[in-house]
Length: 343
Ligand SMILES: NCCCNCCCCCS
Ligand SMILES: [Mg+2]
Ligand SMILES: [Zn+2]
Image: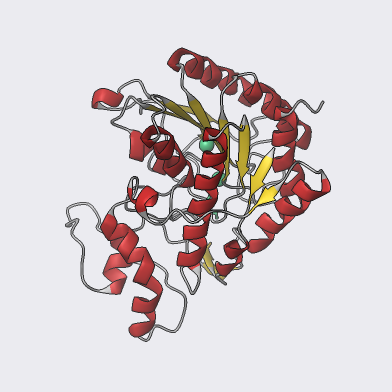
């Protein structure tokens, strides 16, 4: 299987993440992507390609022009205000307030985000653009005949809405790849999010549409991020009614329970008969993940990959979460190797 990777991921090297009242070293750190890349090479998974440049067109098929423009100048605008630290949103429109775009950078940071843990600094824009190009390059490889391709995306994307960043995400790489398939004539696309967290951005982007089926397995949002979306009664709206499926699980969920949800998801995908599949691959479902509470073991990712291959679909994997850096390489590449039939 080919892997698409951009060294430009390392342009995103923020020093802070707001967590527990402290500014900590971010969980979403450059070594995540480097560790996965090393494992790809160690296992000779296949060729590693740098992304092509697709420009902002395919990004703006999913994200609003004003949001993209905000991201492009956010860091400069923040610096122009003489702020001493990294750009961190700290104010949002609460209930009964107005959802309009302020001129002030603090106001715009709040307007275009839904969470405060995702700092922005020099290079975030370049890394987010490269990550979208990585997903689009993998999508192109599959559209040109590869059975599957691994978009080793960093930063991740599945929490990003059309005009919101958060959860370490800026551009929704999986949604951008799904829309690219649609724009290239694929009638139906399924996005399966196996990251520990709900793919709130992906759900929101396609919530009113029947051409893209969105499914996510995740920790109960009553207990974990993103807290305010991802419940099982969210099934889509309007034309999209019935084309969103959320499967939630409690703390301590092991693979033999989680995989019952996977079977439900695979059944729904079979009914939908998509022409292509995007797997939003987070491995923060791992038993030792520092911010999550499932109990999948490394060998389970081989089983997961094998089950996904049995769907028989052209498949793009977009890398999402996974924060046990020591294990992330084995766990992510196990999915690809399981997909390719490794026992
Ligand atoms: N103290 C942990 C807070 C985590 N908040 C964001 C989680 C984003 C996961 C992306 S896959
Ligand atoms: Mg998920
Ligand atoms: Zn996650």
